Amino acid sequence: MLDASALPITFQNTRLRPMSDPDAGAYAVGTKDDAVRRFGHLPEPDYTPESVRRMIRNEVATGLLSGSLAVLALADAATDQFVGSMVLFDVSPTSAEVGFWIHPDARGAGHAHRGLELASLFAKRGGLRTLTARTLPENRASQHCLTAAGFREVERRVGTTPAGHRQELIHFQRDLAPAIEWPLETERLRLRLHEPVDAGWLHELYSRPDVARYLLDEPWTMDVTRDKLAERLSRTGIDSDSGALALVIEHEGVAIGDVTLWLSDHENRQAEIGWVLDPTHSGRGFASEAVREVLTLGFEHYRLHRITAQMDARNSTSAALARRVGLRLEAHHVQDWFSKGEWTDTLVYARLASENTPSSYGA
Image (cartoon, rainbow, N blue to C red; front, side, top):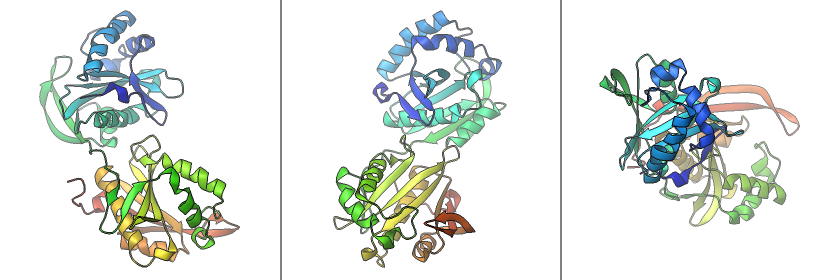
């Protein structure tokens, strides 16, 4: 069931939170909009600030307390002002249906897409495995938002809307991957999240001039190491607030490098991957083994559309690794980056989800 204690959740400049009395006026005004009245399938024919406040105090509060219904507010993260409504209903132990509308004054800012990502995260934290949605065939904007948020069309048929009308509806579904159980284990490696005690080996690795040679940073000082570790400690998943995942590569209990995956295009589910391996452990395929596992995680768990890797063109070792793990060379940019006192070339490797070979991950 849904767990209200997981709220609020914020993604970029959109917040998903419980509704409160100050939202009543904006909610009532929003329901008067032609598009909301046409496509919102609201259960009541008319809303006033007073009726919305009664709704918040009664069925909204009851549903959220029981975990069987969540009528939530989408809010601007900077101002906490109401920008739309997100509803999860018909909740079962494994699934729920989601519906949403955006206040006319807040359209075009990406709140719908981010709201669906937040609703998916909220549902997943409640143990649900599937989210469904229905929309009218003529509601192109809703279809675009659902598709961009990882929902897929499953069927078209006549059904009853939440407002009680019989209409042809497009049915969408998004499968919610179960939470990852850390650490990940490969044949020879252990991939785990960073811990505060990692400062020592990180400084030893990244302070080496041969390691830093093709990276954007100069060799790390201890102060830089502490700052970098603080960033990595927050990178716990693509669907976390950071939009990034930073993992330590361990072999036989020893940290030998790291690999990071981060969103480069939130709306279109595109990400970038990077890796560093201690040179004393090179030549044994450890980096390839770790990167393959994270690529699989990105495509099969996080449902990414595209993953890229960019590197200094002189870094032949990383380029060879990119090819080994199935990344395709897409571009060679000539002298596009001024790094450490000189112009350098950049290689761009990539793979699409459609090019990924499915594995047994998550089975």
